Length: 323
Image (cartoon, rainbow, N blue to C red):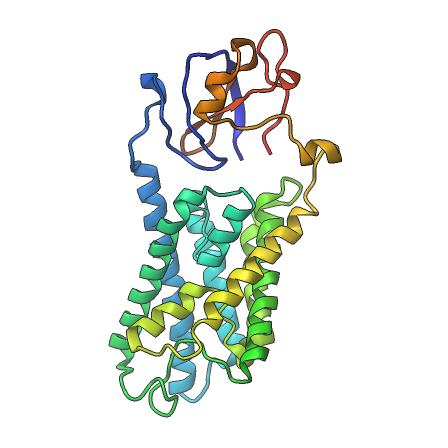
């Protein structure tokens, strides 16, 4: 989490719409200039690509080995491979990109204002690319070419409903809800023990696969289903694995937001006094109303502006807190 390191009056500074956790900005001061595509953002995309590739390759490899060599891995073993891979990747890449590895998670974080919407398309592209190349590598390594989509030939590592579409849709919704609820709880709430976030999320993946794997495939991740579908051209019922996980993740994130700790009154939550303001709002505000709050996190510096006199005292000290 970012920590406040300095508060200075900068009424002449223009900083446009920097969201919590984002980077970049427009400024009339050289100190605040940011490139259009920053090095840190490229690093995040590489992290998402590597994490998603590793997740799909490891998890689907366990499926192929189980089906090809007399089921030595078993369902609990497959679930454990997925869960352990998620845990390892979170601890490896979480500090770089946030370790989403899942378009539904990125969209849900953005909807809860925990992630910039403008970064979502690039994150999704990196995740889907990682999944697709992982599926291509699996096809090459295990020579999975024979009649995969019909499920009568080689093993298909994608996801498909084993029951009715309705049942699979509900299972995907519930499992993704569980996953996103846990992610929101352990990764975004200051009251949680952050050092155990990877363990909690990985364990949730294991439980969800044990619960729904034989029914819907336990995708919980549009990228996980899209990659194999692209490589083998198996698009039947693919919509289910896009729509249901996204709805489940959104519901999980919004539900936990209702449980999130806050010291604000109900009126402050509905009409917050401390807001990040746009350039237009800043131009209309008086000099006494504007302070720049300098925020530093482990990767880069971000700047936010509060424009309410109720939150800024005579010495231009911001007394509101970042969410």
